[in-house]
Length: 178
Image (cartoon, rainbow, N blue to C red; front, top):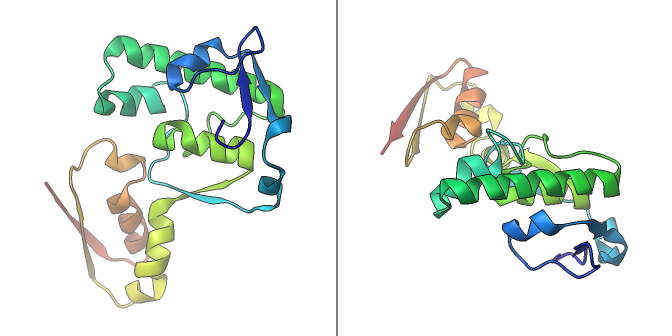
């Protein structure tokens, strides 16, 4: 909606803001999207590889962290499935399972689907700037940190990206976690 896309209910009215409102989505009108966006190349930094919906999707994995109870999580996930269905119909392509589509509550999905954005692991973008490959060529050990090392870490957080890059150079990796 912030891009000018109209999300409409069965009566042709604009949907209210918020994930739960997507359950009432009937039509997506992309003709009202800002035309300047067609001439922009977008790379979105995603810190996770989660899909939009399902067991590893945005609602199931991240909504409880934001305070959603189990009932709301299920409603939000169903609303995102519905958004993905209607979007696939409107755009002719389904983006719900693209790695990173579930990042930032589904913002990755919007970037990929509506802006033809390239979803790239944020850790790779940052590592290209602060830990280029050539710095690892002579390294034996890499030390990194994470506030909490858990199942989400494996979904594309910094320690995994660093470990992947270091492993390619034969480095050992140590992770300090709180």
